[in-house]
Amino acid sequence: MVNYPIGIQTFSEIRNNDFLYIDKTKYIYEITHPGKYVFLSRPRRFGKSLLTSTFDAYFSGRKDLFKGLAIEELEKEWKQYPVLHFSLASAKRGTVQDLEDIITMQLEDAESKYGIPQSETNITKRFTRLVKDIYEKTGTQVVVLIDEYDAPMLTVLHDSERLDQMRTELQAFYSPLKDLDPYLRFVFITGITKFSQLSIFSQLNNLNNISMLPQYAAICGITHEELVDNFQEGIQTLGEENDMTPEQVLAQLERIYDGYHFARKGPGVYNPFSLLSSMTNKDFDNYWFSTGTPTFLVNMLKHFHTDITEIDGSEAWASDFDAPTENMQSVLPLFYQSGYLTIKGYDPIIKRYTLGYPNEEVKVGLMRILIPYYVHTNTVEAGNAVAQMYLALRKDDMDGCLKAMQEFLTTIPYQENTLKDAPTTEGHFTAMLYVMFSLLNVYVFSQVRNAKGRLDILIETDTTIYVMELKLDGGLDKALRQIDEKDYTIPYQSDGRKVVKVAINFSTEERTIKEWKIEK
Image (cartoon, rainbow, N blue to C red):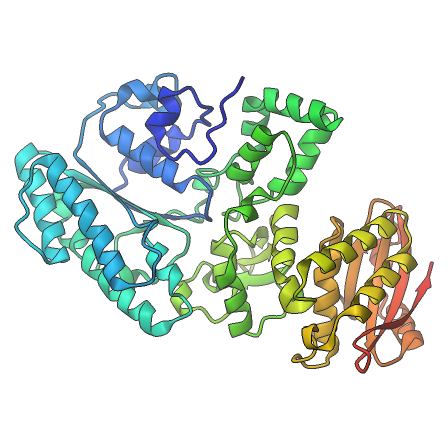
């Protein structure tokens, strides 16, 4: 039986207890030769803490833990360095005092470990004295590893006053790194988001951000090749438990958990937490979303008045999304760095990226969270309606699908209707339908562009492509004419699937779908 290391973030525990380990140690060697100051951002549950722990074991000279791995053949010296390993993952209460307590506790642990007496209370001076004293005591440069460096700030991202306070406290902790250069062998900093280097790390202007470099695209996550090479037993078991062939299992895993790209080129990767959870539970589920509800994303959507239908397929330069989150002008930096959007394409001529949802798990999970904000506060009733819509759509019964939605919207009490406080615009109605259709495990796109305009919603099933145009308070024939005049169906005529035109009339007075017309 294969032991899958779900939630285990310590390299030594994985290696000593015979858990499955996907060998990433070649990256450890490449980064540290001759790298010195390195920064990496990746979404949560993507293996950042395990990577940091691997650096710890490597610089601690634990050659025994790397037996049989790539780095065993690359490293010849295995020199041991004193390692200061900090984690701010637990500093999420949103107060400076909590952050200071957590930093102080870890400084105390380091002082105790290396036999350094406490001579300072000020965090900046204390960190500086600790590194210098360790260097003088051991005669060896020090390694500094900082995991989840941004956790305290993410908690207060929506509160500018508390964010400034948290930033000031972190500056006090990080600021010695620049002046301590002669005493340091290597510094590795990792987290989810990219905050302004100047505002957080002061004068550490030689910090090498490897987050979007093609050669490190697969440093966290699991590539398709790694999946096939290391998970044969799990793939076989998944197939047996779900009456699927190995080929069907691989296709399902790819659709649900693959699709993350962190560079303009290079391999895509699967979400490691979801993949390991799927193998362990012998099932396919939305595991990543079960570990945390990203309420801060919803707050940012509201803050920037974001049209949820236009996020998937966003086009932007790297400076638009690989940008400091405290200065962001849209949700793109937060959505990309948090893993809800990923790189889907790149134009090398104009250096412009296309961003989109990585996979089904992310898109469906996000839409479930958005139901109370776009559809109905009662997510159970909304889920039941979606189930009825799905059963109808599986039979290619768009008429039945729209009837199920109509009945559901009609039964929502006015005081619980998300439209009561929203502008009665076609855009909000489109967003509402987009959220519900996206929960059907079918391919759903909105605001699809062509040379003559943008169609409202495109739905693709295994057998049919639905081209949908929405109108407020009448205009079904107008909507169908618009589909024809704008050539919305032309790109799909040679697809091989049926192409169906759907016109929908939404009543602002009744706040539901009033009528529709379907042309095959």
